[in-house]
Image (cartoon, rainbow over all chains, first blue to last red; front, side, top):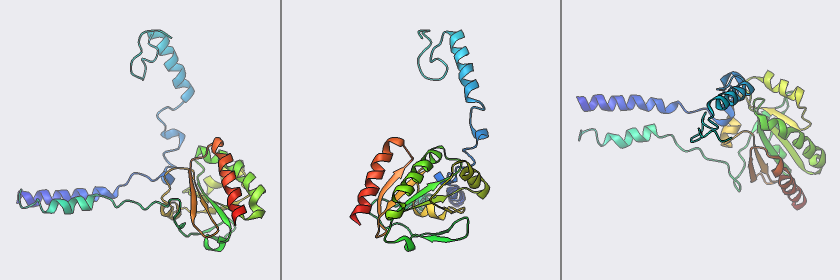
Length: 71
Length: 165
């Protein structure tokens, strides 16, 4: 009984296989500006610059290491 | 547990998607028949005997924008000498493509494939993708993306193919 239930569940999950990620030619929606992580790239750079300067943490914002203040 | 074990391979087979057949160099180019804005049908078969440069592009694709002036130049140089450039638009909205073309005019043939069956047949891996097809309908080269430093090499290839014909 348990085995049948598990098998049914697995079969149900097989349905998820049809949800393919979008193909390269289907990424029109994803390419829209409102889909980006940064609403304004220049503003983000500016904020990062101010942040790293204030904290003395060059590179400490995103990438590993940094924080030595050596710019 | 023992009873469901034989079913596991079946379930795995159901989950695993079949690998897409890629259209690579040396293979026959998948046929297509697509419409231009004017309603004319452009088919690969009817272009047999010409060197065909098939380009997949979309309005939202940045490098596509840079590839158009180069393709215009290629069309001007070799259009009358046996090269046919067919740029397949894969936008979901025709208006997006028209806005793009108003900004970046194209002198070569533009066809539209909204459902995306042609890029699927060619197993396009990135945008833009270009396929250089010889007079016999065989793919000679596949170019992914558009880089200015590759343009000269592509042009040389086109030139030898036209000369070799």
